[in-house]
Image (cartoon, rainbow, N blue to C red; front, side):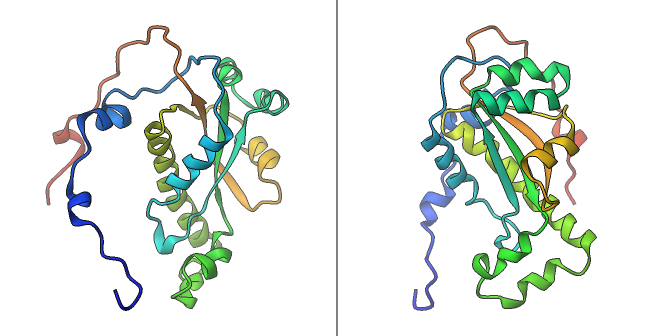
Amino acid sequence: MADGRIAPDAAAWSSPQADAGLDRLFLQARTVRAWQERPVAPALLRELYRLMCMGPTSANCQPARIVFVQSAAGKAALLPLLDAGNREQTRLAPVTAVLACDLHFHERLGVLYPHQPQARSWFTASPAATRDAALRNASLQHGYFIIAARALGLDCGPMGGFDADAVTKRYFPGGRAEVSFLCNLGYVSPAPMRARLPRLPFEEACALA
């Protein structure tokens, strides 16, 4: 288009995912706690981020920040900061992603949302407003992270159960960011898993207005 916009491919956008894709992303995907001894290539982590960052955020603010812990030394430093029940699955996972939100995300809006120079002011009325926007939009991106990982053939083990202050201080010092959760990445072990837990029915979780 003359103004630089790109017309979407309507047919591609309106086509639903094939059943196999839905199985991989949602219907057969599981939270994984047992892992194969199979490394995750650094190039795959880069591709994971490339996909994740394409998901929408308010004014393209992209506050999510990630540290991928994969070395033996890195794991040794991380494990004492976890609850005891999370340590072994994290030790065995090829990669543990520390997912956080950047509380100073607005500093990058001149690059990320250049056509609206005033965009920074939308998020800086107060520290509470800035933090709220950071948490909300990073949470969106962290959801995209899991879907992107599964789309690339990785299995995910998202988890809480860690000393949030200690993990934040170690991986995001200086008060710029706040850790939300951790996510182990790799390839599921063939060991049996328990049956999938129930989900709420539409009528209990949703309403039409």
